[in-house]
Amino acid sequence: MFIVTDQRFIQIVQKGLFHRSVADIRLSQIQSVNYAVAGIEETLLGFGTIKMQTYVGDLKISHIHKPAKLQKKLLYILREKGVQLVDYPANQQPNNLYHEED
Image (cartoon, rainbow, N blue to C red):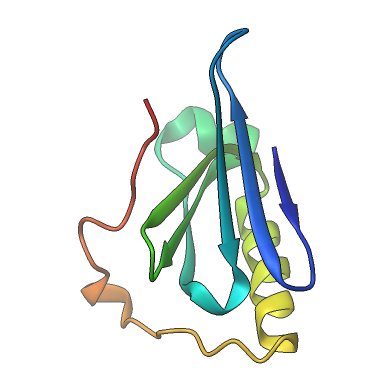
């Protein structure tokens, strides 16, 4: 689950009964928001992954329905809040942006 407020992005991941991780990031720390749809199954079902690069680490949100639409909403919110995003040319995306939680 994730929550976007006017100042923060919060991701809460519950794995099992006794394992919860929380990422709490100021919107101003977000550098870029990208998405990926990999494979025929994700393409046909309309699911993908949102990938965010931040100044404090990288964040990956998997199993998102319509990731392009969500990316567009997140970018709109960030621009409305005056956050300056890093623009990468399509063929020069950083390779090791994303961190998967255990």
